Image (cartoon, rainbow, N blue to C red; front, top):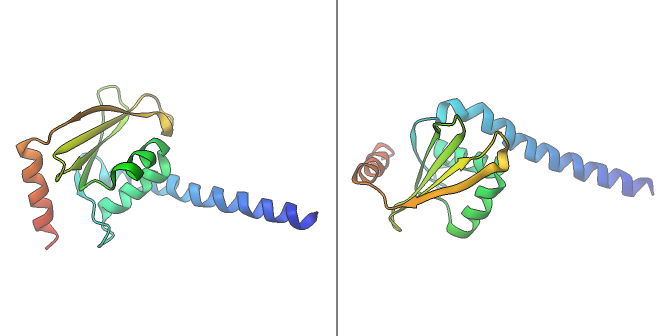
Amino acid sequence: MKSNKTSILFLVTFLFLFQGCSIYMHGYTKRSAMNRYLLVDANTNNFGFERMEYNLGYNRSLKGFVDNHGLPDFIYEYVNEEGRESIKMFYVEKDIVYIYESQSWLADSLFLKEQRPLTKYEKDTYEELKKSTL
């Protein structure tokens, strides 16, 4: 009986620490990511990729979306007019931007506000981001 309680306690602690790290790193790196276009490159494990991973650990609604659509090519995090955290996820090949905004201060309050084609500026920005990594 004691073994089962210990195993359950260990599992709960492990899950909390794993989720807690994502939450901590999401907040810790947020200032560096805000109002910047960030290339998301899993091969190089760059800052944009790390931010996306932290966002996925912090926002379950984003995780489900990315599980279905794959990682974006680049992202842009910002605070909207209501003072809520928001993220734009750019899929260049599909020529679509998904804009998620928070409804409240809760992490899981993100919702898909808009989807639209990329602008010329956004396409040019992506090309510049790719050049800067060479």
